[in-house]
Length: 259
Ligand code: NAP
Image 1: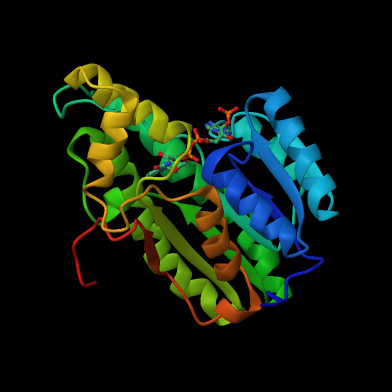
Image 2: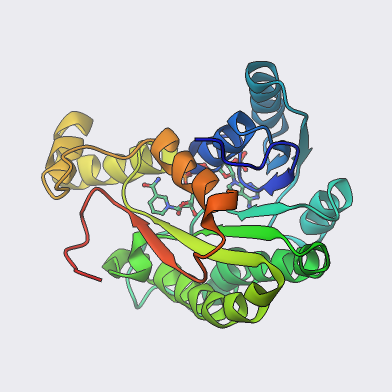
C-alpha cells in the first residue's frame, strides 16, 4: 500500500533502538525524511546511517536527552516544522506504591507526560497552518490495563492520554491527527530487562521467563519493532486521517477486553 507520505519530514524520538527505531524504519520505508533522537550518540549515528543507506531518505541524528528542555530545543532546532512527530522515551522504573515520593512522580511526569506535551505544543501550530500533520505517542498497554509494579508509568501515561483525548479533538479540524499506540510486550531491550527481573526473582532462566510471559499472550509471542513500526506508519499515512484521539493496543491480545 502506498502510504502517500513520501517526501514528508518526521521527528522520531527515542529512535536508535526498539519501538522508536521500528517507527523510524517504517516511516523511512514510506519515503519520509527523518530527524531521529536518542541519548547515546554512537548507537544513534549507526542507526541513522543504516536507515539512510537502506531506504535512501535523509536521516539526521540529534543526540540528546529528550526529557530535558535543552534536548527538546536541540531536536526542534534540527526540525522546527515537521509533518510527523513520534514521541517516545524510556519508561519510568518499576517499584511498589510505597516506594515513590514527589520527586519520583515529577521525574516520571516530566519524561512521559510533559515532554510529549511540550513537543506537541511546539509543532502543532505549523501542522495546523499547513492543514496536515500526524502525531503518535508511544505509551503502554498499562494505560488500559494497569501493571501494578509500574505505578509511575501508569500515572504519567494516563495523564498524557487525558491530554491527547481533548487536544486531538481541538486540532482535528485542521487536518492534524494525534493518536497513541499502546505496546504490550515487544522484543526490545526493555523486554530483556523485564525478563531478567523475573529470571532473578524466580530463579529461572531467561528462556523460561520469556516462555512464562508468552503463555499470557494469546498470540504466544512477543511483538516486534517491525509490527509496531507498521502501525505507526499507517497512522501517519494519508489513509488514517479519520482516526483521531485513539489508543491503539498492540499486545497480541494480552489485554482481555472488548473495547
Ligand atoms: P528500548 O528498546 O530500551 O529503546 C528505547 C529508545 O529510546 C532507545 O533508542 C534509547 O536510546 C532511547 N531513549 C531512552 N530514553 C531516552 C531519553 N530520555 N531521551 C532520548 N532518547 C531516549 O525501549 P522500547 O522497548 O523501545 O520502549 C519504548 C517505550 O515503550 C518506553 O517508554 C517503554 O516503557 C514503552 N513500552 C515498551 C514495551 C516493550 O515491551 N518493549 C511495552 C510497554 C511499553 P538511549 O538509551 O541511547 O537514549
